[in-house]
Length: 308
Image (cartoon, rainbow, N blue to C red; front, side, top):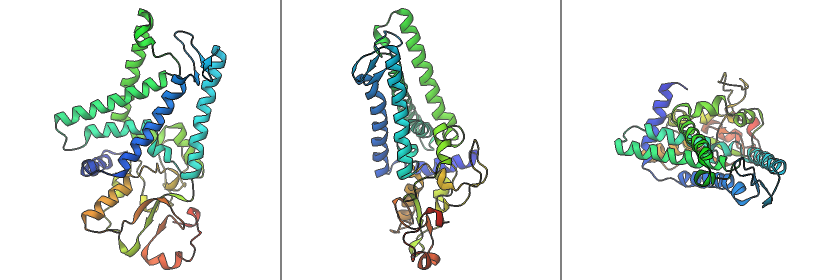
């Protein structure tokens, strides 16, 4: 992603920073569910490998290393199945609302949001570091009893804290400097989902009813993965990483809602009340413009495949 689009995105995020929005609360819920699941499975003893003390667990009981490892691998597989089912039902919703790696990018952007004073930058950095620590601890809990951090011997303490520190630095650095480039070009789950047919009844859709769109392009400029939210059925062309050049933008959309939030903000700023860009369930093509609404409205059961 070039520096100029990033600059535009940050400027829009600055305008949105002090405006409360329902999406903020929804994303907090999504992150809480993800971290709760990551912590809950090993800490409850549902499945855990303990490379420190040998306290492996499976189904809330002590287990051998082999059985504990099998439980961890099954847990990882089930986590993938859940995200796959979410993709089938609602597109890449997990990417936009439940993926902790994407949240690291948001914390990284918060530090660079224009207009922050030194105290604001320090607070934003502290939040990013705290989230990075929580994420790393949740992953470590699958492979080691976290009590090693205060009960281990000298060698175990040094190793455990070194792993924790270096992993937190790596996670925080990812959010500060790699950010959405990972989602666009490297994330294995995201790349796979760009090949899988997404949901046809849920996502970002454009309804230019009553010529409500003011052509401000805020939705385009704020998209973290360089898409055109008003025309997600158009081919995206060449993109970084492994992707299908002629696949529609819909396949790459993270469903994060940033474009919709920016659209709502710009429409309200202009005194309007009809928001043309929406996210949620819908019927018909992804894009309906005013001049075509009369024709396309005759096919209320059409799907994404007929839009564009």
